[in-house]
Structures are given as C-alpha cells and as structure tokens.
Image (cartoon, rainbow, N blue to C red; front, top):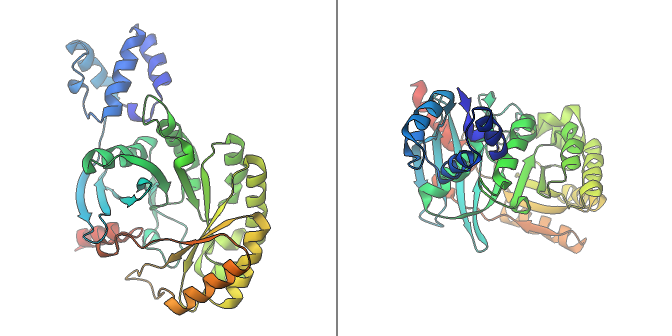
Length: 344
C-alpha cells in the first residue's frame, strides 16, 4: 500500500485524476490528512465506496503514544512514539516566549557515534519516512494542544544522512495545504555531512543550518565525534562558507560544553577563529548527562570564562536553556530506557 501521508497534495491530485476522480476529491482528502485523521472512514464528505476503495490503495498510519512525560519545571513535553514496525522515536515540545518548538527525530537510531550522545547507542536501525517526521510535528500539536510555531531537526539521527526523506518532509511541512510552516522557522542540525551541504544550499530553503561542531580542532573533535575523521574541521569550515555565500543565511555552531574536553581557554580562542571564519553564531549547550557516557557538563566557572572570551572577541554567542532536565529530555535517553526495558 502507498504511504499517502508522504505524498504532496499535487501528487495526490495527479493520482486521483488518473482514477477518474474530480480534482476536488484530492483537496478534500488533503484537508482531512492535515487534520490528523487516521482512517479514510473518518472522511465523512467522501462517498462510502470511495472511502473503501482508497483504503485498499493507500495507508494512513499515525504513531501511538508509548510514553509521555511533562516537566514540572518548565512544561516541556517529551513523547516516545510507537511506529508501525514496533520501533520507537522521541519528540520534544519546548515552550519559549516566541512560541512552541518541537524537536523531532529523523532516523531510528544513529550511526554517527558521537561519544556524548545517547541517540547513537545501538547504532542506526533505519531511516524515517517523510510521513513519520510529519506525524511527529502534527501529532505533538494535536496531543499537547499547543500550536507548533518552530521545528528543529535535532532529535535522534543525522538529517543529512536521510537527505531525500528529510527534503520531502520539509516540502510537506511548508506546503500551505499540509502544515503551512515557514522554513525560516526551521533549524536543521548536522554533525557535518558536508557532502550534502552544496545540495542543500542549491535548494535555498531559507532554513537555519545548525552545525554540531562541539570542538574547533581535529584532535578534540575526532575524539568525541568519529564523523570528523573522514572530513576534518577545515573542510567543514569551507563547506559552511559555501553554504552561507550561496544562501545568504548565517550558519549556527552548536557547541556542547564538556568538562575537561572542549571547554578550555585554548578551545575558546580557537572557536573564536572558526566562528569569525564563517560568520557563525555560537550556541553553547550545557551537556546533559547520559548514563552510559563518562562525559560530564562543564563547571559554571569554565562556562563563564568561555563565554567571556567569545563575547570579548566579538562573537555572537548564546547559551541554550536546559529544558526538561527532569524528564530525560535530551536526545535518545527515553528511547534508550524503553529499549533496555524490552531487553529484560
């Protein structure tokens, strides 16, 4: 059966026309899908025989809530969604003064092997479909009752490792008859799969490219991010410059502060050079502790000294708020606990 939720409304229209159906039927179906129905039977303005016929051709699958945790501190909501094949992925809804942001996963598991991240434990299981990513956004909005205004692709997985499906998801997210979200309100996080930077730039989607840098030099970065071995920081900077020149969009550097690993004054000065090299904004992230990892977050003293060096050097820097710390809100932790419970 065809996954109709991964189809653009125009594609649905073409297929319906080939069946001899009037154009308005495709619009009706697209409207119902955008409302979150999980069956053609719910599409009450379609004839019964047409509902039955479409149900034999197309599948509509919505995830189930396996677990839902709500932070008592800040209202952050973390979902563990059950997928059709029995796998599970995490999604987080975060509340900010400018609106509600949903952080979605793009793969079941991850093969990048970053040493401080729970998402990569167990490796990559499979790619997520466009419909599954869209469901993370739509179903989070429907279940929480909170209107989603921003989307970040920063959950489990490497988005550029699932490039074609992610681009189709973004098309659905942006489509006026699907979710109708401006891509200027979307951030895509990558560990540096630079082979796809030029492809992404050519599309000129006007999203924010957030590069998970986490170290400004090859020695440190390779130690905590194996993906750096094949590419290197210099090559990554070159790819970032090309992206900015092609799109006119400033790149953001994500930088997890890890005690005694990447938080020295030497690292700060090197990061200043890298940020100025490409005109990047730096977003410092207090590391969330992962049970299986030996790495710990930087001390407040090291964080403060690091920030001072960046600010005094004229680098635009922010520190990400720690949201949902009481509900395992960092990437991969809830899914990891779920998988471990199934192994028992």
